[in-house]
Image (tube, rainbow, N blue to C red; front, top):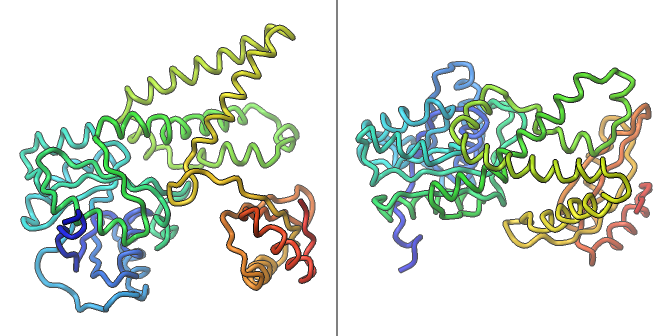
Length: 368
């Protein structure tokens, strides 16, 4: 009997917290035909999330509202409030599986256990998905599609509850990864939390530049600093909850940066040190997981010039669909001072010629 065959059924889910993650979970589950309920201490956020979820059609079998306790409770509140809300949910909904979406697990699970809550029904989780904007208005039913969702059950967690959450997560299109709280926190300190700090600190350096200096920037700066637009209050909570692993990861980063700095100051004799640091970055980049968690694939980039006027992007995507080529990723680079932009399309190498020919035939300016 495999894990999913042991899973308890899920017909009703209560989501406590209707921000970006909570509302996106609600939208995704509603599309699967699951009955979704929402709670939030912020009435405005709750009203917006409820409206979005209620207007989402389900691809599964429609169900009437379920009376009584939900099958699953997902806590999607800020990190500082999570442990108490989880403990309360475990004490209130005595037959429900309870999970969460916090980005750190060790401290959280310790606090829930100390509260005396029933740990057999607690399946901690962390979806590796999000955006640099927050709130239910930014929510999306496909936010978790192809993304990793870590589950960190404790040794006493009921395996049927773990299987239930694994099944639910897969319904949202995510890839389930089972790990321990400590292993999870060490990993995300480097893969998630350090990138946030780096993006914020690079962006912080722009404050001292004049307006003319900031104009001397390209897509690389926008790529590196995208995360810097994230909510500083939320990220202060996240970093505090994983302080030591993040500090250790930053120690390693500072050491690597110091090697490059010293190589630069050494002049020509330090060029090999600088190159070694950059080459190590190339090797590390190759380890970043690709689509659906698989090994990364070297896609071909097809660039298309697009005028900055209403309807142009829509027309481009219609013409792409007509070629029958599947897009792996899309990026838009805006041309400074010009009413045009460059849309970069990542495609499988075997499909690039078909895409280029089709778009040129449709009148697009294609660049390689």
